[in-house]
Structures are given as structure tokens and as C-alpha cells.
Length: 613
Ligand code: G6P
Image (cartoon, rainbow, N blue to C red; front, side, top):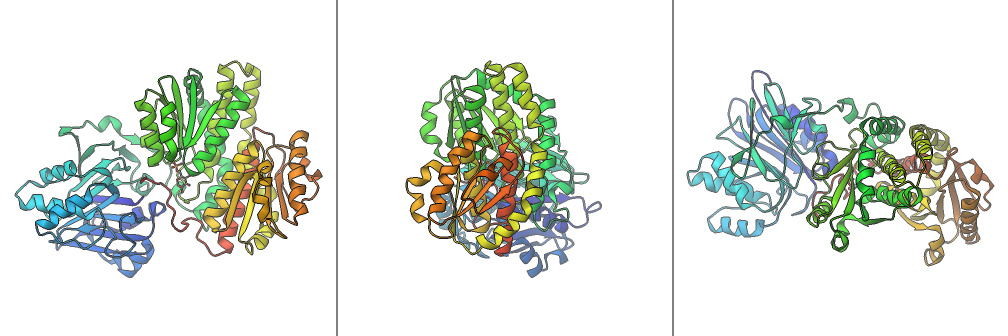
């Protein structure tokens, strides 16, 4: 879950690449932030300079005066530790014995221990506990045996097993960076007089929008005016794969907000609208629904927030299309893949399109003949590429580690699929389905209203909640999936314990913890009489134990008794509930985090994209 960047440039056009490396790396910090490092070939001297340490990018940049250096080509890395604790030694780039080779890596080299033993027996000295360091020593070893550098790199790639995105630089070829990809994402950025490699597109946006996403098993090199890609020893024709991304530079910057998370919460009215329009004009939801309609068994999977969006898909497919959908958390695919067969469809939900567990689930299902629909926010990422149909959310880059705008845009895309499925299957009449599609047009407006109406209560509530250690978030029907996502949001950015339960289930254990002032949220799935009646009983049960009861709901919920705090988020129904309920909860989680002095954009121990199992 690390991030890597590499730049090679024509010195007449880009005299110093260090600024590009720093800027590019800052935009990848969401991928991990326990250590950072840079390696570049110094202008004039041709020496390899390596500056790295534990800590955040800006600390390392300041501490080592990185921006005072000049480089003709270079690599950068932001780390989320897998092998070896965060420390200077374990920070990337890693070098060989001679200090002439530098390597950055994202992923896990599974067979590193045996390679390391082999290299040590040949006299190589290792200074870190990482799996990555073997790459630098292996390359050095092959060079010392007289191999040409590219041949040496090929040999390295043929020996390492596991997941990797690698970039390698050595003093012998200051104008070339070698790269290789297997499982972990890697993208090439094509510039004027320079080329880049990076784990993700946002890091390249200030410099170029023309990108080529690498595929598993591909490796090669970039030079200022040349890109060469190879697979299994054969040159790859990549020019037809060049994509021009439309994300703007500003979309990956904070735009005046103190944190990305707040910016991304506030952007929801707009990106929901853009996603809606994009779905209508592309016909992607309809195509996906047609494929799903042919299935005899439908599954939905994802990790974290994406799984919660998947739960809502299962719910809406039952409600609107009378179609049973089996939801499972992607890391648990081992059990569910046994049910997969030709005729099954898996809906794989992944914002990044790169989460390893979701990718593995997809591959396991495909190998048993199932077909796959991807719902993703990143064009040309791996999961969409390997799927039969793709439905894109149009949320723009999400930098905050906690998913916000991508959640609601996923829900919108998935609900559109459920409606179309209902139409194809004849469960919904044509006008009924069109009416629902039209109602979803208001998703962005509902999100905007939720933020406006809820903000005052949220501010008050933050003062109370920050003095508590634990809380429950309860719901019924659709409110259950929303409760799971709400509890996750609160937990991951504020570090307060928040646990979600179906409200009816709360009597079967959780209520034992409730005492005076214990906060219990109720997220309402709709304002219908029936729904309110059911929730009323649960609210009173909690109130009877002196809980602090908080209801997030439509105006009709003001009739509920036993409520201490009512957050009225405006009118909504069962199909539009997510857009009214979630934004205010996301805002609450954000404000709680800030008031407790946490960094909501980079919660401890978490990474935005999890590319290791
Ligand atoms: C990590 C992130 C979450 C995200 C999950 C799945 O845990 O911190 O915000 O929901 O991965 O990521 P994906 O890119 O597959 O949606």
C-alpha cells in the first residue's frame, strides 16, 4: 500500500526533477505515510543521492532539505509498512552494496527470504528488514556478472514472485528508469520531454493527463522520449492504450478546505449529479443490469466502505428487482467462490479498482466461469479491466483515506443497476422504473440539504460525543447498511469505538453495555409510518436505560418519543435515504476527528488502497 513515483527528463526542458518527485509523492501520501524517501541522479556529478526516513513526506522533505538538491532523474516512495517496522533503514528507496542502484516498490515479494539467503551467501550485505532490498542486490549481482542492464532487470523480474510495482534507477543509465508490475498498480505518464511512472494518476496530474495503465506481467523502461514495454520477452504495443484523463489538477487539491475529507464531503452534491448524468449518457447501468438479468446466481463483493455499498445493492435488488443477491466481504471469497459457476455474476465494488482481496475474488469467480460487473471510480484500473462490464462512478480523485463521496456515488450507480434490473425482469413497469431513475436525479440535492440542515446539531453533538469512548449506531431495513457505514466512518477517523447493529438485534446482547449517557444513534431508512413504528420501540428500549438517543431522519421522525437529539435531514424515502442520511454522519465523523486532534485525511494504521492480502 505504498506509493511510488519516478521521473526521467530531458535536462534542457526540465532541468531538475526533484520538485516533480516531491509534488507527485505528496499526492500519493494517502497510500501510506509512515516513511518517505527519494533517490536521484544528481545534476552535474552523476552521483546517486538517497534521502529517506520514517515520518511523513513533508517532514522528510524539510528535514533533509530535499528541495535544495538537483536531479536529472529520480524515484520517490511513501511507505505503509508490511515487512519491517517504520524506520530509516526500512524506508525506500533501497540500494545495493555499491550504492549505485536504487529501488522503490509497492507490494510484497513473496520469495524474498530465499533470494536474500542466496544473495547473502554471495557476499551481499543487507541493511533493512524489507523484502524490497533483494531487488537492488539482485540487479547488482547480474550487472557484476556482465549482463546488460536491461537483461539484468529482466532476470530480476523473472526471479521475484508476488505482488509488485517496482521502479529502479542506477548510475550507469541516468536517463532511464526500469519498471515492472504484477498485481500492484502502476501507471505511465507521458510528458513533453519527460516521462513518469506512478502508482496512481493524481500524482501526475500537474504534469500530464496522458497515461498508460500497465498490466500484470509487464515490465520495461522509460526515458525522456521513449517508453518501452515488454511481456514474456515480447515487445508490447502500448500506443493504443493511451488514455487521456479528464480529472483536473484542482480536483486532486484541497481547494481552500483544511482537509481533503471535508472537501470530498462537500463535493457530494456535484459529483452525485455528475455520476448520475454520466450513468444516463453512457448506458453503463443498463448494460450491467442486462448481464445480471441473465444470471442464475448473483453475488456482490467489496472491502470496507465498498462492501457497505454492496449491501445496499443487495437490499435494493431485493426491493426493486425481486432478485436475491448474496453479499460477501471480499477477503472471505474463499467460501463463496465454491458457489460460483458459469451463469453466476459477481458485482465487484472497488473505488480504486485495485484492492487485492476484491481482485482475488474477481479472479476466483472468473476462473469458475462466472461473469463480473465492476463498479469503480478509477478508469483503466485493474478490476474494471478484468471485468465483463464496468460501471464508473464519476467522483473524481478521492484523496482522504476515509471514503465519502465515492461511497454515495457507488450507491447511486448500484441503485441505478437495481432499478434497471427491475425493469429488465419486469418487476418494475417502465414508467415506475423511469420514475425511480428520475427520483435519483435529486441525490445531489438531498446531500446538499443534509449538510445544510444538519450542521448545527452536528457541532453540538461533537462536544458531547468527544467525551465518550463508545457508541452504537442502529438502523432497520436500509438503515442497517447505513449504520455499518456510519460506524466505520466514526471509528476510522475519530478512533472512538462505534458499533453498528440492526436495531432489532440490539436487544440480543449490545444493550447490556448501555448506561446513563451512552450514545445510541438511530438512522432512519424512511419516514413511513410502519418504519417509524418499528424504530419507536427500539428508541424507547434504549431510553429506558438512560441512553443518549440520537435520531437522524426525515421531518416525520419528529413524532418519535424518547429522542434526545433529532437531526432533521429533510424529506426522503427508502430509495433516496443514503443521500440524506450519510452526508451529515460523514460531517460528524470529520468534526469529531478534528476536535479530538486527529488527522482525518490520514488516520493512523490505515491506507486508502490495500494492495496486500
Ligand atoms: C481501504 C480504505 C477504505 C475503502 C477500502 C476498499 O480500507 O481505507 O476507505 O473502502 O479500502 O477500497 P476500494 O478502493 O476497493 O473501494
